[in-house]
Figure 1 (cartoon, rainbow, N blue to C red):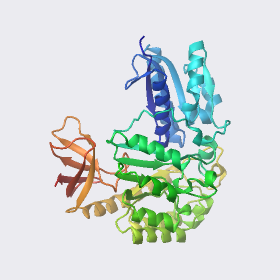
Figure 2 (tube, rainbow, N blue to C red):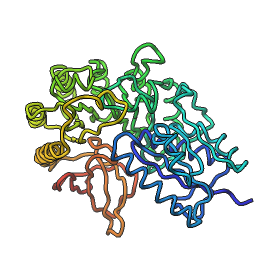
Figure 3 (cartoon, rainbow, N blue to C red):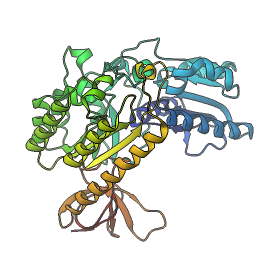
Figure 4 (spheres, helix red, strand yellow):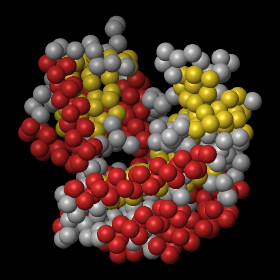
Length: 448
């Protein structure tokens, strides 16, 4: 009997990617063959993002692209999943009649019901937030179909968020914090590592530093990291999406003393002005942030820090922005991302007065990125002449043995690369390399 075929397009963050991998894993278990192109498939799934305006626009554009393919006969059934239908189910059902089915976040929960509706020839739509499931009820019979290269993977340690930052719609979309048990996460990592190919685990959540608070009555990220640190088959453990308000000295020391935890930290600060931080409901002050960065660099001198800032938050004055600019110049973050404030409906910040004009947001955004560009150039120059471990990610297409890799100081997909030319290496190799030169955000190296 011919297997039914499925294609999936995953948008948004790595947390959404994990949900996509679970959806594919569930369909694969139920007999579907997975295709890499939306051509001649029984089901096409688009797992959407709806965090900010630009993400919603991208999701809608991609949906219309798949609708065209469905009309052309390449797709039999079109499914829209994830944050967009979770947030706008009623509107989408009214406006996108060409879509057959809608699933909310954690779409893997809906697969059996979806397939039952498909068999009956009826449309399916269901959100997840009203179900209020415990995230840790993931069944171990759902084996993820990884969409990342075989040498690294993302592992989601919790779902939802209890921080309620005033600009953020995530708690409304994905619900409150729901952590997975330590033993289940460890079991998943061990299973992923059994191939012997996997070298890097990237831990993700909306706020990894709050991991376990709901399940154990206190944050237990340190305990989780110590358990994962014992898995010898994993070379790098990377910690993403931490919150400056929820760090402990023990967490800093655990990162610094580990053999496997990367000397890298994703620490979104969003702003540094106390007035703006308070309006954002970040529950942390400039003083506490500075003390944390000082402690991190004291205990882990070669740590690489990634942060992100929201530019043009309501009420952000020239003084607030200049304070942020001087802070960035002083701290010199190894990696920095910036976003212009997106006014999201039904968030407290959407009702704030003194909304900043788009033109002013763009001017400040450009100024900040230009400052960071110079800082990045200076930091990268500091690597020249050093020998570093490099994880080889991919071979450049149509190139003569030229590869892109990363050091432990760079996260996949968001940070810079190490460019290396060598005919004796391949994707997934962990090699010793000497940094020889720099580009704007990348390093050049040779194998040693």
